[in-house]
Amino acid sequence: MDVSNKNNDIILKYMSGAFKDSTLDFYGLDLPKIKGVVPTELPVLEVTDEMMDYVFELEDNTYLHLEFQTTTKSDDLARFLLYDARLYKKDKSKIKTVVIYSGDIERADDWLEIGSITYKVNNTYRSKAASSQYSVVSIQNNNALQKAV
Picture 1 (spheres, rainbow, N blue to C red):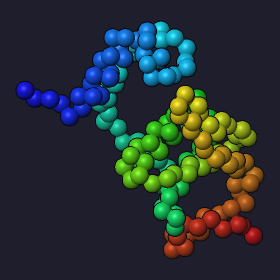
Picture 2: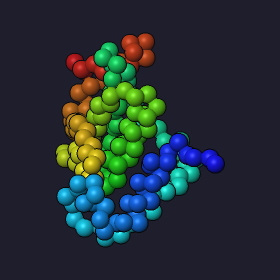
Picture 3: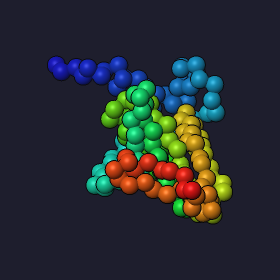
């Protein structure tokens, strides 16, 4: 007889679904009553080439993820969270995300709270006037930004 190495997990999942009315008490969770069981299989088939704008490895072995935005959309933070989650899963390094807004954007959401996950980014705003004070230095100078004189 084959016994799964995840037998304890399988039994607890089954019991939680079968005895949903007493599951919260069993685990000592003080939450609202369970309304229903939601399917846990989330099939994913993605064939996309989504790219973050820039990711830099810093000297402290963390990552700096930069996103450049000229618009604000309701799903931006969820998209950045997904980028960071995928990057973390790949390399297990801490990530600091900075969203740089340009144009006329003066305010944008900087956090997303979805239950047990709270995602926070740092926003910075570069108005058209402020952005024009900087010029890109040649590639030979490592693409550094230099204040225009």
